[in-house]
Image (cartoon, rainbow, N blue to C red; front, side, top):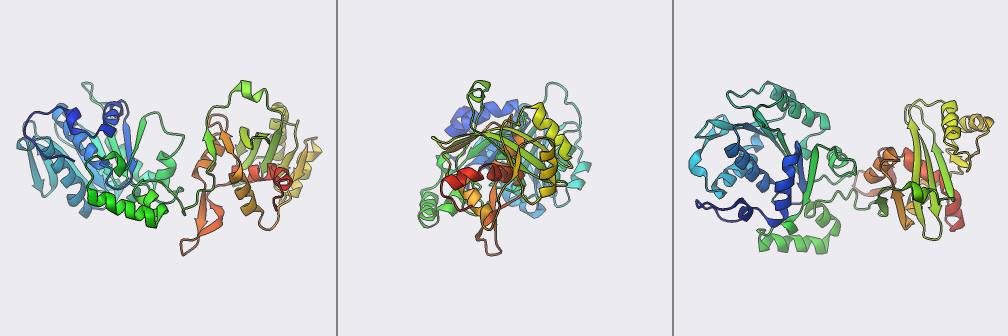
Length: 417
């Protein structure tokens, strides 16, 4: 970013244009997640915001990374840069042992901790000023969401007085795999109401060097997947996205009233979830509308039957997992229209490929939240050499039910299923 100055400058002049809207909006949320590619200036803007908040409100802050010995050369230096950039270095003092920054007029502190053992951060207490600002840098270094929550819970302990607010900043470069917990948590249609997610890349940073741009463009030419992952901050998985035709939007009751080409599928489970999917297929436009779902673990077949009749979904055949003929026969005995899907060698690969060839798969997250999460998190498995395998990684029960219900459409399109 720009050069340091000791002159009074409007904050809007110090912030990259792409971040001005973030600066204004993020204050309405407790959790502020900034993700993106290399050199996108996300950490720089978090550092600026923390210094701004510290000098405006009587609070303390904590900066965390997974490994303690990375603190000095990352968040500590980033915050020192922000102090100098804002031209307020005469008001701050830094200490190396223990690592901390002190706002001299009041004694407020920015503390720095490694989270090699997240449980140990629970013991942090600050004198005089509440610890209300937390910055976790390189969030993807944490193996589980629980590790992050342990740290957050150690900060958000009680109500703050005098109109103060908690500010939790999470910054990271998205991992490659879409099944990574950070991608599943923040690259989703299901963001918590108290969380603001901001995505950026070097293309949004007007201060990026020409040398960096040249480097990025070279990678773009030689390896597009690597460019999209490292420089644009996309979770590309193995380089192939299973479903590039997903549309997440509200499907209205008025639309549903016109649907008559119904498809239904059922994937059996017990400890794994059983999943029923109901949809409408517009054959002319090749659009698949996902309308309803029923999902649960340890579901008895009679429970499935009751739900089907209750919702009047016995108007169309259900194509079910053929590996459980006993359940199919039991459900059929209650008068439900159900048939086994004819699975065979290569059926999974062909089914996934066929679904991806559709023009659109329209998913209403409110009507079918479980299915929506499966489809948006879908990623191919990789072998030990990092090569893509023709099978999905993670849960695919809803996706399987979709393959079963569409098998006859695949055959009509001369697909080998």
